[in-house]
Length: 617
Image (cartoon, rainbow, N blue to C red; front, side, top):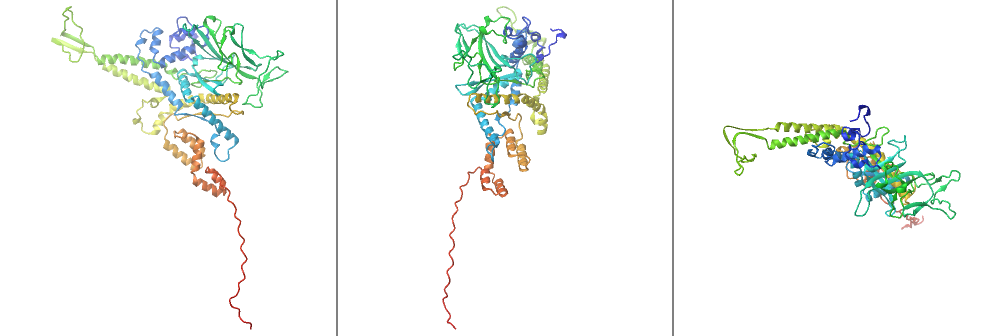
């Protein structure tokens, strides 16, 4: 145990009550000896150990973990899936019913006279949704967010795939993620200049492969001369600078060299007119474990021992210029990080000891139920059956239909443990209530509240108040991250010359409702608000969509509504007198012009001839 003056307080202090976490660097005092390999930085040992602890709780292996760390009764521990239920329940409320990509302004593209910005927003929204369908975005979100809720951190990566002509989205275990910070630069809102993903590859004797370490590195740096795949004298794949006939370095097409400063600049499609001198380099290599010593960790692996990988298009991944000025990695924190902190906190973090108490109570309850269902019986003055071969009394078992013959002073007593069992069950209920309160999931959110006992819907809404604040905080920690992810998707497609160039438009991920919504109330509010002119039709339709109504696209729904809004069209005709505007409002094509028919000039009336001419006087 550490001295009080050595009390360690960091992002994983909630695990300090575990003996093996008090000093993970001590030899023999670690549950995961594989983390003590030389390539794992000492500063990341506690973080990686915390991830493994949380994974053990999620998979009902906390008892096995306790047995490995010295608790001989750990294998008898009863684990009934409470940690996994907390993770899945929190994940369900976080994600809501569905997730929708929205580009502001896209809903105006089909109304009135849309601006070029509205048309561009609608076009981008359609492209992002098509990309999301091809990349199985909802599935990727489920994968990444479940690990984020459990471990406190999640990671997305994007990579341009030339063969598929689109950006590929992948998720990584946060234990593989090693951001490299310069001294004094670490901040939750800042981006590191270098990011590593590293993990160990086991030896494969059948294929003749030794144990290796694979590391993928993204690094921002100044733009350099053009490079091409090459080979060293010993046959290793590397990248070599391209030289002209005169031996001078050659620039990539589109790059510009400043002769005064020697700086190479490039204009990216998303920043027209703004030269940039920064690009992102990708390195993907492997090292044999036997070649690494104590002087090397993931941040300082020797380049002369590296075996670089080759991409499907033949490019050697040794500082490959990705032709964009950002690192295509998005780190997801589960909670809003503390000031100066980068890592999030697991949903299980602050209630881990409570989960231990719950498992211990479940174990005691199982033992008490065994003695209650099969009680201990004490016999006095009974004639026990004798084994005729040995002459010894046979073991006595309590079974249905068993009859013992007792003497006059005989007695049979049973040990009644039902009272203890009832007390343990009450303690379990108490622990579950405490768990619901401390996680802010509430008894209503966990499904342990008897809804029939709730006096009104308003009371249920008040009971769900802590859950609402929890979900709001978790979504706040992610909103900017998903906006960043969608911006990177747009720019990668621009760099691949698949989408048109231009400044990046904001796009965001809209979460679904996380609790049951009174649709009737929302519908009445929308109807009254729109008819009263309080908010627009776009806002009303979006409110209905978020309330759970089956509205796929806001713009299309508004167009359908307007095609049947004859009363509004009549008022528009009365106000403007413009028949063309009315037809456009109803979504009708322009009417053909009515040809003018020349009118025949009326003939002059013929002079009337009197039928009778009176005689002259």
